[in-house]
Structures are given as C-alpha cells and as structure tokens.
Length: 251
Image (cartoon, rainbow, N blue to C red; front, side):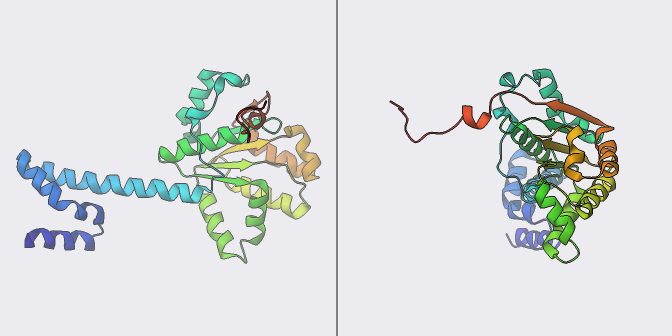
C-alpha cells in the first residue's frame, strides 16, 4: 500500500493526476487479468489521456461563448428547402474546416441560421476543434478595446487561435471607417487559416451599404467568398412555429 501511495505522489508531481487517482483500481485489475507490464502501463496512459481530452473539451466549450447549446440532431433538415440531407451530412463531417472553407448563411430572422451555426460549433468542439461564437457587435467591441482591456486581449487571443469562428449577424449594425478597417484587418489576419461561419440577413451586395466603403467591402468579400459555400435559408420563422405558450389548451 505504501508503494501505491509513493507511485501516486510521483505521478502527481509529473502532472498525471487523473491516472494517479485510479492507480489502486488499475493495479487491482491488472493483477486479476494477469496483464503484462506494457498492458498495465498502457491502461494508465489511456486513463490520463481520456481525462485530459475531456478537460480540454470542456475548456473549449467555455471559450466558445455559445448563446446556447444545440445538437445538430435537433436541426430539422426536412423543413429547410435550402439544404439537402446530403449537404447537411457533408457540413457535419467538418472536412471543410480542415480545408479552411467558409460557410455563409443568409436569410431573414428565424429561419435557423444561428441554430445551425451553433450546432456546427458544438459538433466541432466535440470533435477536437477550437470553435468560438461571437456577434458582430461583440467582435467590434473586442477589436476596439483589445489595447486597453485584459478581457478583450484574452478573447482576441482565443479568436486568433480558433479553427472555426461563427460571426453572427454580420452587417447587422452600421460601421464607421475605423470599425470597418478593424473588421478587415481581423478577417485578413485569419485568411485561409481559419474557417468562418457567417450569418447575415443582408446579401453580400448590401454589405457596402452598412460599411459605407466599397473598397473595404470588396476586400472583405474577396477573402470570405474565395473559398466558401453560400446557403440562402428560407422558410417560416423557427421561433414562431416552435413557440412555447402559457396555455396548453388555447380554447
């Protein structure tokens, strides 16, 4: 027993805390199974690896700042004419993230743009990717305050390291010249190394109206659209058709 405690102490010093907690059980199992030394050592490493992977997954969810968590299993592909089941499955495979493609989801409020983008974020995080959700307004705030705000510095650091960024409600708000420049520099910095999911209720042709500068608009569009898939989502508002009411019986 003293030997087990010594092993646990050394393992904790080596930062193998997860495996250290279960060493007594692993030793007992190895004795019962008459496991070889290599099999026993492998079981210890697997335990530590699994625990670290789970902690990393939970950290990625913390950094993601999702407005809510929704699984892609909940997304009703059959009521969204703009997306076939085959296309939905292809998006879910996330190969496009590995290739730094962008996904542009256009359409009016309530058709499922944010729902789909959140679901893809969750899918990416669960598969080992770093994914972050941020609204247009919050991104501009981070970019404008990163030199004076520690919180903004940390958030920008995570954004710059992300594999996938959801930029929600792009062009929802008008930008002044400085804000438009900041948005361009941000997108340009991540060009061809990070995938974006962009949601907007305005078509790219209307973006210059919000930015107020056709040159910057063109530069942003060039970098977003070059490797991208545009999906124009249509249909009734998901929030209205799935609304929750106070009365179960409306009679």
